[in-house]
View 1 (cartoon, helix red, strand yellow):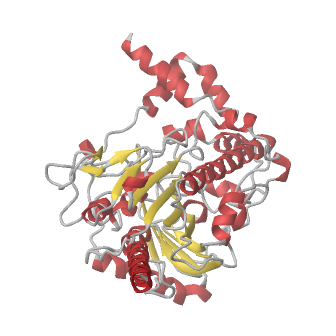
View 2 (cartoon, one colour):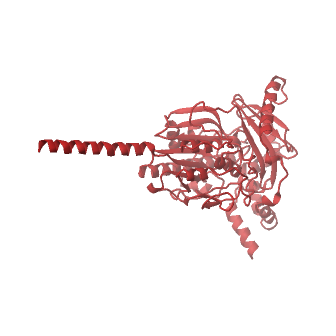
View 3 (cartoon, rainbow, N blue to C red):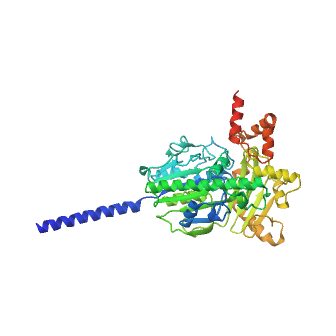
Length: 505
């Protein structure tokens, strides 16, 4: 009896060890979940990047326990081209996705595919949006033929994701893309501020030298930082959701801005506020945290990082590079572009290195202040500063934005001149630097076809109705135009609804 009992104990012990070993192997073979968070229209305006007056404790913690990339730059300074490069891993000007909200009926050029196609083939559930954060989390906004949910073959089927609005245990491994749009200009900014328990004090903000220092401009900046704080709270909701479902440790989190802040020299421009992005990567099971990485990283690189984390080989055509491994194939420069945005065409290009930025403006006969209809509703600082300019009350630095033309070339030392005040392109001491930056520009163009330099097929670039709304307001509601001139945002969403209602009558 004693031998039989001992035998049973040994068998049970071996069985237990086999089960535990199998469970451990299964746990170790699990592919990571991937949560990709896109915050709209923001530069490096987080507390952990040194922005004054703002509090972002959730992202501070995510950065402190992960990797904070200090030199991440967008390949474009507008949302839809930037999102197009991030979901394909290819520079938007190579795949004809450079014009804002264009080519929505045109399939991607072969062999390019969205990264979700590769992830699905590898067993990932691809999810767009999350219902635990309010407003716009399902945004996709890419410049090729697509639909949110459904199969993809790039010929007859154009679905990017499998489902919407959040993940469950059975979805693992999953890739979840969530947009936080509160930082995008919108009618909700005043409401968010009114509900904040930590209203940013306009007296505490530090304005860049390109801004006139007025009470309304300070308030506008404070409102923007209020949105950043609310966005940080939303990131906390997403992390709590992972914790509650027991998925936090094995989830790779990538947080990035889609383009720079929506203000002067920001979104739509080739300067630091338009191109420099916050980028934080956090993965408890796969990354040793607490690092500030100073390598040059491009927005397109998130695609390669996602595929490599999922254990997939990168397609040969990708211009993206994975950034998780240190010192792996570092970039010498980043090529950025700005092309059509609504009714305003630019052909501006930027080369960013660790120390310098070179800007080539192929269209010089147009002011930076192009009176773009959509922006008339959403940049009160512009209106205030136009009035100050008329009265001779802007500094020389501030007036530059309103000059009638642009320089064909610009060169800045972004380390010693972070606000890009001093154009060095004609300085004899910097001719060697200027020539090297031109070489980078020519090197990129010798290897790639830039569709942004081709003639535009305008039927694939339908203009928005903001211009028609401006004309209507000037004729029917001039008092609203006057409010805008005084730096008061009139509520574009509400006015757009009134305009549509009027057209139907």
